[in-house]
Image (cartoon, rainbow, N blue to C red; front, side):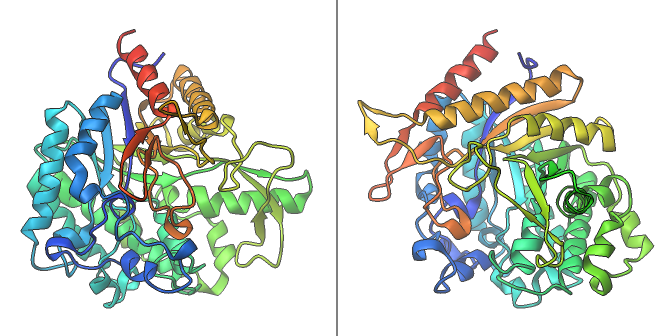
Length: 441
């Protein structure tokens, strides 16, 4: 049983579903650039078509209403609104999001708008991207455009989605856009992202009328053995993933383990910048998929640890263990470390190989089980006093899953790659019934 005002949603991001990334004067993003580089994406896939949401948004909003959603989390493509990342506003791009938001409101679906889900305008990347000290100011200017345009209809705002993924896969490992492997730059990228979040919050507090927060990917870390080396490795990985962005935001300082991890590449950040970052957001978005099982490994630099696959445990096709208890542990752990900050589960879901369509139904029983057990885990945290206010399935659609292309399917709704036809999976029907049972309770 969930609170009466609990939000029931699904989540997407712009580059993953919209398609037509250069339509009507839009500027290219780093993901558009990255996906067109040979060898970067599985099967050579790109987001050029994706789910075709840019053209089929009205149909998709009708599907959301049919699904019974009371909220929808989506992101804005920065380059649609400001093709060069700063300066001139592209009215056609802004109007696309106005129409989408209007349609959501007409259907009684609460919009949750994410300003940045990884698709930095390529024009800004060519000026230095998130390594540039002016990047927080660029982001604040972009945020102001959106806030002035749609805050009257958008009650929930997220500045950045998973800044850790922007930082590590994007700038340290090189497997996400912009595809860099620059250890020395990585801490500064993370710092600039946090300054960008703070700058956008400052703008919002001056102009906005509702609530603004940050969405982070979190996973509890467990040592693979009781050895001191494995326990220390799990502790470092916890700092590296779970505390890197939340500690400076909510406690005012970076975890000391990061200096150990990065050594001479870890800068002495100015106290006034840390003070600017430090501030309680209106809420934290939690993106939870699995736990980390950690083994010490000195060959894995800079962390000295690696994630291992548990033996004989159910896993998704991404190789992630299905571990619902970790969601409860994550929510309770946040309250213990940072206080009872309002929380939303802004992403939770799983990729599986779905059964073929039979008698009008795609029987994705494994996904139904995943959602059911994780909702039970969320309810357990609620029962222990966590201020949890909503749940968003990742994802509404099978979509462009970044470096995995279209090979990994997280959606409640299947997209036919030939004609774009939308088909509810069994999980969509189950989720609709679950939402209705909660609303009618």
